[in-house]
Image (cartoon, rainbow, N blue to C red):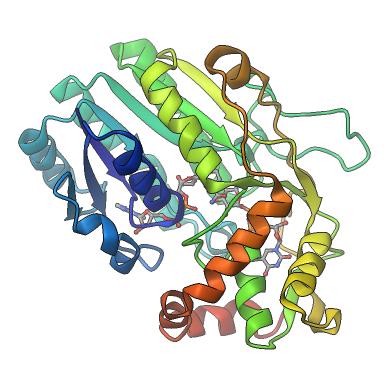
Length: 339
Ligand code: NAD
Ligand code: DAU
């Protein structure tokens, strides 16, 4: 079986590549990635040595390149992780989000139709549901919660979800969609909350918490997300949406304090900065559908996963030091300079 994994040089995609190579000795994995600022070939350095792995540098919006790859590989399954994924960047400039997240997804699905794949899986996000109030802990996102997006990023992801469901209904394309909560773990790009705080704390730099720090996210260890997608592409029903999350809600400020504690750094590094525009208050997933239909449950407790993650950043300094010494410096100055 051949699986095309788009965006496999990014955070979750690379973890998925390693998971699939380890767990399915009969699968060939072909990674298609544009290598934007968020994609890093060094992340896949161990996969590249595997004869069942192939890397192709291409843009999912490039119709010719995508169709050529499908012609060569005749994939059975396509899993689309490729996306612009950072909310703050989408607020700064939405255009590339619309291009990659919407047009790119449609281009991939056109190729899937042409080459008759048995499954197109769209990796989506809980952000398509908007947010929940902090004072209603009884409320959760289910698969039937209406789409109600806040940022250009989440709007572009919701657009792609709607297109995927339309391709299923109109053309009979065997599509599945997963909507996962916030992931954390190895290879997480240091523009996102957890790796940014680890990296800044290690460098004794201020830890910039947006607004009052009380916004809540529902954190899931990345390996658990990869296992959920593996189950969905093999056993999930076409045309269905599956929410993925581990009932692990935490306020941002508590995460940052925990990282300080694990690293033995003072909380005085914490600096409250201007809030994100349109900042979603709380995300919380109800994962009962994927549990009852496919038997999925998260395996890594947050207290273990966060320690493993901090250890990974301590052991893989070269990976993130290379990133933060490049164009990231300009990004950081622009985003945090006068915040
Ligand atoms: P990431 O930003 O770390 O990686 C994105 C990858 O896509 C990079 O390797 C990049 O080079 C590649 N890419 C970007 N544009 C491309 C294009 N036009 N053509 C080909 N490749 C391109 O993202 P991530 O955090 O790993 O997220 C992966 C997917 O999972 C995204 O679709 C995101 O919306 C979704 N998601 C992320 C989270 C999370 O917590 N990170 C949670 C739920 C869903
Ligand atoms: O919920 C799934 C989503 O999780 C994914 O779809 C996105 O691709 C992914 O980036 C993530 O989105 P968030 O906006 O929740 O993640 P981020 O790490 O950017 O921010 C998490 C919270 O931390 C959020 O409330 C904003 C806050 N934050 C973030 C940064 C980068 C800070 O307080 N300070 C920061 O410097």
